[in-house]
Length: 358
Image (cartoon, rainbow, N blue to C red; front, side, top):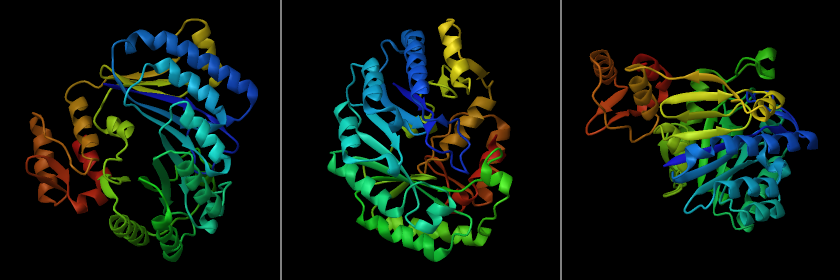
């Protein structure tokens, strides 16, 4: 079983916290990307032959700017398909019932909306181009179009965010027909506008209260936490993202897209023109390759697998990893029964746990 990812880099505006490869939404770039994706698909097609695709994901950027017709063309390349989760990321300001109906007609069955907040002040801080009302309108538009699997992203730890504004966002979730939610605390990455401005964020104790409030609310609403940052109604876990956390092979297409194939992680060049030029010349667009040797590869798989709340069945590990796990158990960060998993306290210190194991 494999997954497929397509990076669609178009955006009408780059958000101040975004560290992904994005470019302006211009027709000339659409044609260039379409050409590149078709060329890369032909190049990679022999690898996919005979393998079962279980999920297809269109990320970005804002993939809906590419248009339902272009997305449908790519989906048809992947066929014939059966029981495949097909996700398209969308922003509320470009969303409508007509758009979602068109996406559904070409095979899309899951929408991931970049809501981020349902408080207008927080949306202004993030320099988002939609209001809270527009975000809710987009969610209901997807539902009315017949999309039964709707996911949203929410962020906390925002500059100037208060506990009351966060509670205000969370209280509105009960009204919404969503089945999945990804919850992130804002991380200010280098090379972003927020980083250059040195924005201030809530203190750690406030951040912890934000998280606990979200966990309590989502539990009451029937969402279970199946991964550190992912919550789902029963049977609506993200099939695609589960593949990342369990090291299912996947191929990424498009500029800057990552792949994980036969134990190797590689990334395409993060430049649309260079990406297409390489493919026109029948050259690989890959600019980064990495294959971790044993036992580093095993350590990484354990660390990533621990993101899942169910943890993992521990394989045979080298002595240093066994010692690290025992130490983390003594510190109350891991527990070990049939599976090794993070404790509730361990979930708060996942980065530390991962660093100790790797």
